[in-house]
Length: 379
Ligand SMILES: Cc1ncc(COP(=O)(O)O)c(C=O)c1O
Image (cartoon, rainbow, N blue to C red; front, side, top):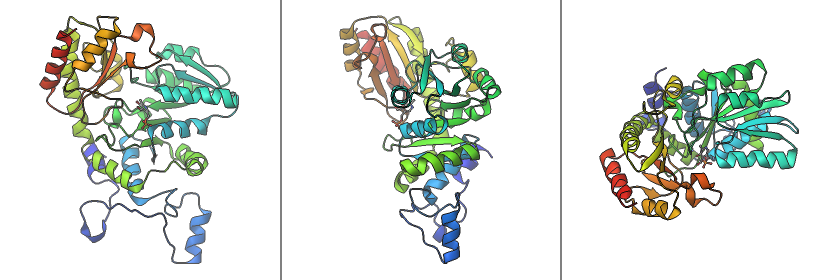
């Protein structure tokens, strides 16, 4: 199935009243015509529509599209990216298991591992974002490897195939956060990963107005997560939000292509600027990571970071406050142009004071370059 078919028609069938747009099934309940039908549904683990904390037709349609986009057998939408992360981690770990996690994974994912370690004696090894480091940390107790590639602050790329080959040989499950590349540019399942998670708050919804998460994997793993964690923890997404994601998905591919075009223009400018020490954008051929990155991804998103040639917090402050088109705001993945100075965080290490993350949105990239240029002139 090609991407157009997935985004524009897959799973939609005959829509009532010949409406062209798929409806929002805003209902908590689904009724049955007979005792037998009800009993069959209540006894079956995979009967689709009983109660909205399980499945909903609007949500299920989006899940089918996401599964197809990620080339996985099934997918589930949940109420946030963090929920996608925690539900899938919980599914594969039990007391005293060992897990390896890249130390540049999303901060709240790392925090959740620390919580599991304190509360359930899960042993966690955080390693630098590099395949050899991940493999070196494996022990006989390792049950899970948690990856993010590219990472979302320094955009570090992992050799995913190298990690999953060993993980499969040793029966270790792998989860990857694929939010940066989106399913348009990277399909980790094809690189051997078991579970793909997304903050659908970012590109998948794409308009900066929905919080959601997605989990994709094999039928068996997804059914396990659905029965054991999803339904009992209850982090269900409302049908209205699923529908907003459906609307966002229609333009996912063209948005991602535009993010990539814009990001190439902006990163080209930054690579050449004398006041910029380092640029982290792996899908620019000027990046040292390009060879590995382009062997796993077919394009890049709008998220990148760079280091200013200064160690002064004052200069960083002046730079970000001089930007007019880029707004100071966390998150990313929509049409907006955003900036986050690492120095604004309480836990910023000294060596990262000059690290600036930007999200390149969907507008005219020459305006973004102009904005960065005038702000760089000020410092
Ligand atoms: C890479 C990455 N993964 C996961 C998350 C968590 O997603 P959410 O905010 O939707 O819970 C974020 C949030 O910023 C993120 O940047």
